[in-house]
Structures are given as structure tokens and as C-alpha cells.
Length: 284
Ligand code: BGC
Image 1 (spheres, rainbow, N blue to C red):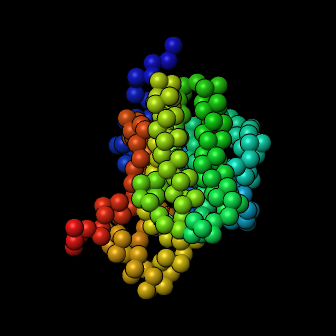
Image 2 (cartoon, protein in one colour; image 1 turned 120 degrees about the horizontal axis):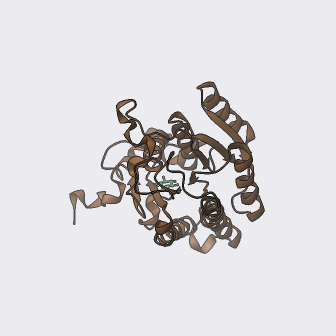
């Protein structure tokens, strides 16, 4: 019988390498052909994980990420799937198991915004955001958990039988006028994550979220790409800089590793202090 309390063989790897070790593990990262997902895929691959770079549109971008990872000596493959479609998600995981044998880490990251004032928001805008950001998280987590349970523990590669990381948002906590669909989807992710963390902890499946603040990607390009916009945005960030995708990549690599083995059911806000109510710094 496997003793899951025994440190994994790689738990003492810090003398060789200060960075978290993911060698021998496979990660599925959804929405990994750009932005935060791309940075997470690169960070996991740099620490030794084989990475499935999932994308929905823009296969060229997914190929570019895969090529770079492979050129740097890593393992990666691109797999198309719309995370809001059950059949797509099932074939994404089947392709991963075919290519790399199993799945150890899911980073459920694919997400989008379709912004509108409530009175103008169409049902299609509401539904699209909920389908991709929230239902996509459910479908991917379910597929990952089924594979973790099928495969069972692998203490030689990780103390946890599987790890799930959701890319949430500061807007799981901060209400956001004009973005009710997006904030509702991220609020949903918060309780999806916490509920399945409670359910799956006894199976040694570790479930957490990262809640990024403003990170320079295409999703919010209008908020940082001109000096005036950036100045306005910085008023919301006590730490005084807009985040880069790699700020999230590094945290995800740590959270996926055994260095974070006792972190379970947590949301890590990686936001330069955006959740600290900066408006109160000079008032209240
Ligand atoms: C959104 C960005 C926004 C950031 C901070 C993210 O979740 O996708 O558009 O800049 O939150 O408000």
C-alpha cells in the first residue's frame, strides 16, 4: 500500500534546484495559447512538467507556445477544445492520457469577458461568459478528477494524487459594474473550488484558485496600453505596477508543486494589493 504521508522522492530536491519540481508530471492548461494561460504553461514546462497547451481559436499561437517549450528542452503538445463543450473536454483529456499517460495537474484557466451594462446585456453575452468561465471549470475539473481517481496516487512524483488550480479573478470578491456576467462567473468559481476542495481533500486531490488582479494581457488591453489608462489603473493597485503574465505563472508553478502541499481550498490573490480597498488610503 502506498503511504501518502511519506514525502515524495522529489520533496528534498531543493539543494539541487530552488525552483518547484514538476518532473514526471503532466499538466493540462486551458486557454494556454495567450496571456496568463501561456505564462502558466511556460512556467510549468520550465519546471519539468509535460504540458498540454489547450486552445480554442488561434492554433498558430498554441503551436508557437509548444515550439518554444520544446526548443527549451521541455515536452508539450497543443490540443484544441472548447471548454464549455462536454465532448470537447472529454476528448481533451483522452488526448492527454494518450500522449502523456495521465494527468497530474489541471490549470482551468480559459476565460473571457463580454462586457455590457446590465440593461443592455444580452442573454447570449450572459450565457457565453457563464458557459466558458464557470461551466468550463466544472467540466475540466470533473474530467481531471475522474482521471486522478482512475490512476490513483503516484507518490514518486507528487504527494497529492492530483492538483487543480482555477484561474479566478479579484472579481470573485470585488463587485464589478458593467461586468456582472464576468463577476458572477468568478464568484461561482470561488464556491465551485471551495466545495470540491472540501469534497476531494480526503482523496488527496488538492484544489485551489489564483485570483489575478490587473495583468497585462489582451483581455484588458484598453486598461493599460496608453499612459492615461495605465495611470488610472494604477490608482487601484497599491503596489504600483500592473502585473505581468509571468507573475501568475510563477505562482501557479509553486502552487502545483509539493512545496504547496498543505495549501488546499485557498484563493491566492495575486493582485499587487488590488483587494486592499485602495480608495480608502486617503479617506474613510
Ligand atoms: C479582468 C481584467 C481586469 C482585472 C482587474 C480581471 O479578472 O479580466 O479585465 O483588468 O480583473 O480588474
